[in-house]
Image (cartoon, rainbow, N blue to C red; front, side, top):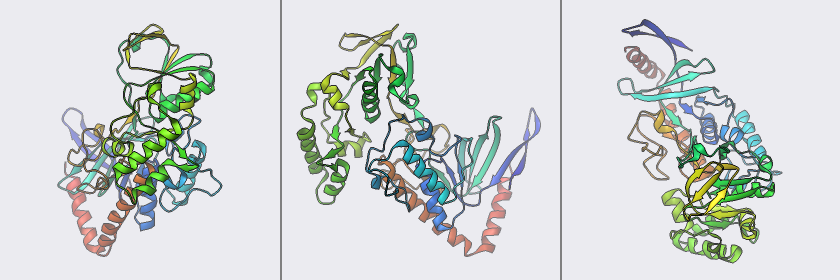
Length: 424
């Protein structure tokens, strides 16, 4: 039920804002993390509301992913709680197949997000014990407020594109896009394209450009771990998971690097210097994901993808590298990653750090105080998000069922809180 707050403004007199009291948790974000949490809550019999700023679920996949994208890990490590991928899906499902899976998942658990609703702020009201979440709706930007006992932050690690400030880029004159806007290399055929970044996206965009007869140059400023996606037909990630059950992390890292050297050879002579820290240790401590090679390295070895050092400055149609070399470039793709947007709207500093991630490391970063939860910030992909979702739903479900054992007391408590909320 929607209601109206009648508020007093010293200059404007009275004005009104619509609001509603959420019966259950409010989930911000309808990506895989938000869907997983909603599904687990549904299994617990807990009602919920899901808010999504885009007009569809999984907007990162539907709106900001390139056409050739596939899951980088085998499907069994990427499935959401309760529902495996269809058996006829390949081991590494395509972008289209993953979206189909998510849409089917949402339908199965009757998850119906409120689309085109962007959260502007969320703060905890100490007096009432409720979260107050302000949003704007639709094209007319109508203001609305949700009041809830539990707030689940599911906006994820990749909510906003990171666009670096590079000297002279504004004067470059050619097309400059972030990897989130890149769809296919077809439009870049015959062009010299600079790809800034050498993570999984940078490698795969460079590969796609080379396959479409463009001439990509990939900027590699720092060290990077490149591992084969498979070893002897077995997923490298699956091998690592298996070894971690029996061996210490440092030994698993050593074995992975030996296997990488046997399969890929010495990659440092191609400008790809490995970090001193092992791939799994680096992922766990810094959140930096190793590159799983799906063909880019072969293109680098053949010269179809050029590896270049850092950028010094851009000029009209050209750039100068830190080593003094100058390149003529037609277009630039910024594969410079993403960041969390939580600090821009969540008014809280105890649970989340300034970088938009929970302060507590995995596996303890899913629960804060006052009914605040985080899902999908583990830096462990979809399996980490699923683990969070299960924990959150069980925790909220337990509290929900406890409250519903005493309906009269719950009604009195809610009535008192609503009276408190109405007093501005």
